[in-house]
Amino acid sequence: MRINPKKCVACGNCTYVCPMGAIYIDPLLQRATINRDECVECYACYNGLSKEVLPPATVRFVRRTLANFRVRFEPEPDVCPTTAFEPDKLEWPRVVRRAFSDPRVPHESTGVSGRGTEEVKTNDVTDRVGIGEVGFTIELGRPGIGARFRDFQEMSRALAAVGVSFEKNNPITTLMTNVETGDIREDILNEKVMSAIIEIKVPVERCEEIIRIVWDVEKRIPTQVVMGVGVRCDEDGEEKIVLPILEKLGYDPQRAKTNIGLGRKVIRDLTNAAPVEAFKELENA
Amino acid sequence: MTNTLHRYGKAETFVDDYIVFSLPAKSKMAGQTGDALAAQKRFMTIASQYHPVSLGDALHGGALRPTKSNSIFGHWGKRNKPNLRKVLAGMSKAGTMAAVFDKRENAEAFVKRIKEEELGISVNISSSIENAKNACKVAGIPRHSIAYSLGFEHVGDNTPGKQAIMLSTMCGHGMVSINLAQKMMSFVRENRRSPREAAEAMSRFCSCGIFNTTRAKRILEDVRIGVK
Image 1 (tube, chains in turn green, red):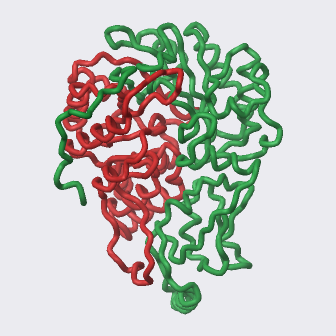
Image 2 (cartoon, chains in turn green, red):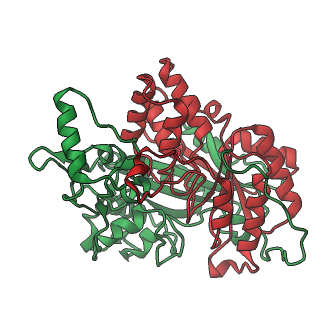
Image 3 (cartoon, rainbow over the protein chains, first blue to last red):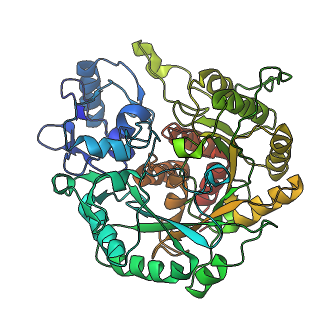
């Protein structure tokens, strides 16, 4: 991403909306500037800010004039008043930043937009995590910190060392040069992304061991870790095996994604289904 | 993917936060067949009848989106408002489609209705564990699988600035920056923006439309009067 200096009026709105805090007003240039090493190419600035077309020279003049009276030009906080953001053409290896940071860009490896796979969200169709198994999603970089691939490698190597296998369709796994050792391509190790997820599946007996490994690695890497633990419920819809292990380790899970088991191998044919009407007053809800 | 799992907050802060989303199994190994997009269009159209806060199409966005103006007068123009019809009309490819509810009865009634529809696509509820459990109970569905969030390691319940984290993590992809959340909190405290305006400004950055403006407004009301 780049900011066109001919258009930027240094209003400062974009400095707040950048999730990585990588945009600042350069005091010499008097323009918004991107720290390219910290930018993860998430496009939050380009996609998220509303675009307006105020004339830059006039806005700068007005801003300078008002500043003399201690009055501030203040566009809406989610607006770039002069449409100054312009996407760069990204080359390898920088392109991986966007693949893991802009949720609208699908990974070629999985076809899934985002940073992981379907986890247990489609478990009712895929049976990916069965009874007696635990699927871990180990996410690095959130909230608003970011992570470099060398951090992921630290985690993947520690997990590989104890013989776990990585979810093969996961985007991080596809960037490994050796899934037995957890090594990731050397040319991307310094690339920074918003976040990404390492996915593994282990027997339930290894649940505590894996969590302790994550705790250990987390102390050595300069980012934040958040874990998701996916399990299959029993026939009554209860889960009484993994939750006690988590509680024993000091966790008190508050939130979860619950797959309610409506997925089937064959999606209903709606050709002759009775039509449904949308609620009439949809706008301005 | 929706990445709704790791919203920050204790269970009671999800009292008005139910995300019900559907997605097809894309892996060839899964062997799922049929018209997923048609099923998801029906899913979302039915959701619209249960007064959602937002509908979100992960590819195209939610009910509140950024705008583009071609006129200099656009700067002073009317701000855009939530538009659920645009979400329904824009669905062009099967993926993650989400409905966000702020009332328990609406979310539970929707889940019950979707069960009766037997669409065959996977449906998940992302909320507190209890909220999802109750919704399944009302619909008479045993839970199939569950993904627990273990929370951010070493980020405790009384972390300074926790309300900024609560606001920011409502976009699981991190598109709502913590800096923007803090700025909006300051704007509300200074009465420069109402909680609704501040919540809607943040919501426009959430590219899959799962940002819950009702929950955000409630958090911002607390911020205004200093409730921690």
